Image (tube, rainbow, N blue to C red; front, side):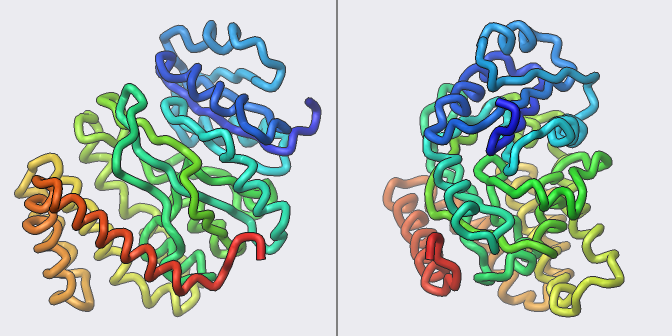
Length: 332
């Protein structure tokens, strides 16, 4: 296919045990006007042989020395032939309607540059977990403000027009992590985002996750969470309304890092991050309540089935309240 509608980039490094499932979840899409570009970032396992054995003309294979996710993604984007571009990590999966749902929105709504849905976590064997990633914009119709407050997207449940990258450039190859958040912050300064309230992807949690609790680079990746914000707020031409969000943005990052250290049971590191959150916050009392929730109430509630249902109900209530304020309805 010389001019596919969608280019799907699958960056991979030593993920042969999961890669076949990822590729086939792309090839089994109900929207089949696509190409899958597998970018092998210096794998030393059987990745090359696995891709070769698939035997589908829609799959292309690129190999490069091991240089990291951003370099791999950029190689795939430079070779992309599609009108739309999407990313699927090589240990994750798409549901069959992923592209039809998101590309359909972009086809019908030229005002949007990006459409994204939800990804549901699964364990290493593919069994679904409760965690959901991807939510509606906190500030409906204002993707930039929403992304500055927190990254509301799911990177493997997202499709963007190619022109977005022609406008703002590709991934920042200097970043250790959070390369997607940095990219979407840049895109959101020029394009509207549309949230599709549908689970379209599965995110695999396993011991080898780059961002997982057992990752040898856990601290490095977590510390890098502020870098996209550092870049954004260093721009002297940033709109005043966005610059006014600096306190809230950094507070949320420090709270996130504190939560992650709590999950790792590194209580001193968690306390340090929560202290940063209190110092950064313009509403320290509210931030203190959030810290108490993360550190005390939430872990206790999650120990019982009733508590887990209560946490789920609260999350659903927040989502419904946010949905009531949505100003953009897909397909309207």
